[in-house]
Amino acid sequence: MIIVLEKSATKEQMDYIIERVKKLGLTPHLSSGVERTIIGVIGPEDVLRVTPLEAFPGVEKVLPVLAPYRLVSREFKPENSVIDLGKNVKIGGKKVIIMAGPCAVEGEKILKEIALCIKKQGALVLRAGAFKPRTSPYSFQGLGEEGLKYLKETGQEFGLVTVTEVMDPRHVELVARYADVLQIGARNMQNFNLLREVGATQKPILLKRGMSSTIKEWLMSAEYILSEGNFNVILCERGIRTFEDYTRNTLDVSAVPSVKQLSHLPVIVDPSHAAGRWNLVAALSKAALAAGSDGLIVEVHTHPEDAMSDGNQSLLPEKFLLMMQELKLLAKAVGREL
Ligand code: PEP
Ligand code: MN
Image 1 (cartoon, rainbow, N blue to C red):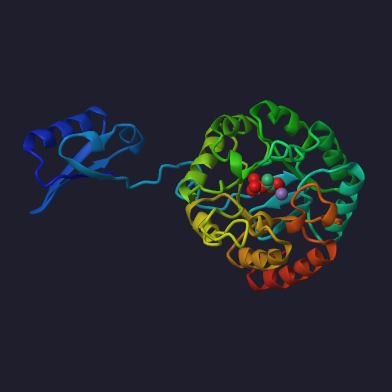
Image 2: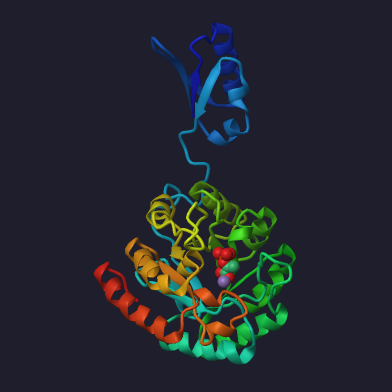
C-alpha cells in the first residue's frame, strides 16, 4: 500500500499516520521527495483496507499494491486448477468442455430430445434451468423441483454432467441433491449469502459474471466461495452491459485472457446470453476458444420457436453441429482438444 501525502501535509499529520500504521502492526517506510512525501506500507493490506486512510488529514490518495483477492489469485496457486465435474469430466485442462442445452427445463420429453442431440455432437454437460431469473414476474419461472428431477434423470440416462442455476440460498441443498454443477446467475453474482451457501458445499460452482460487474468484483465473488472452503469454481463470462443495444450484451472477450492471467480458476464463455441471437453464437464461440476459454455454455433447442425462454438465441441442432465442426478445427489450431 502506498500512501501519498498532500504537498501541504504537516510533520504532525505525517507522524500521526505513521503511528496509526505501526499500531496496526505494519511497517511504514517514508520516502521524501522535493514535491511529495509517500509512505510505503509493508504487511498484510487487509487491515489497512478497512482503515479509511483517505479521510486522514494530509493524505492525498492511497494506492493499493496487492489485489484484494487472495485464494483465487495466480500468486496463491500458480498452476491452473482442474475441476472434476463428475462422470469423468474435468475442466481446466487441455480439453475444451462444451456445455449445451435449453435455457429452461420445459418438460421431460423435450429435455431428452435435446440431450440426445447435444450428446451426439460431443457436448459433455447438459445445461437447463429449473429456477429461472426472469425480468418479469409474469414470465415462465421454471418448473422448480419437478424440473430438477427431469434434469437428473436425463443426465443419468445420457451420461451427461448436469448444470443448473440456484437462485435462493434456501434452495442450495435441494439443487445440490439433483445437479452435478450449481450455477450462480449473472443477477446473483453479488448475492453474498448465496455465495457463502454454495461455498459451504463441495459442488463445482459455475459463477457467471454480473452484467455490470468488473473483473475485480467478479473475482471477489469467487473469493467468497473459495473462502468458505469450496475451491471448485468455474468462472463464466456471459457479456456485459454497454451502450450497444444491437446485441443483448457485449461479450467481453478480453475478460478471458485477463482472468486467466489473474487467476488459476477455469474460465468459460456463454455466447448465447452475450449475443441474444442465435446467428452470432458460432462466431462468438470461436472468438472465445481462440482467446483461451476452457469451455462454452451454449443454448440449444430442437424447437426454438416454441421455447419458453430464450428461443431467439438458441441454436438448432444442425447449427450446433456445424459450430462444433468448426470448433474442432480451431481447437487443434490453438493447441486444445475438443
Ligand atoms: C442462464 O444461463 O440461463 C442465465 C439466466 O444466464 P445469466 O445469468 O448469464 O443471464
Ligand atoms: Mn437463457
